Amino acid sequence: MSTKNRTRRTTTRNIRFPNQMIEQINIALETKTG
Image (cartoon, rainbow, N blue to C red; front, side, top):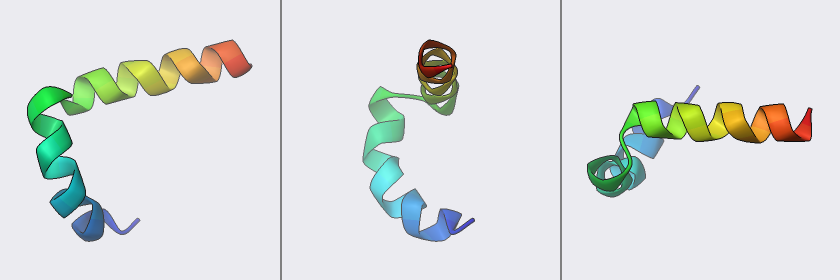
């Protein structure tokens, strides 16, 4: 899990989309795709 590389890109996204929102979206996508 290379989180260090993502931290730089996610920093801008984290401001608009917190980790919680991303997790909920991922869960929703997983449930839809089955």
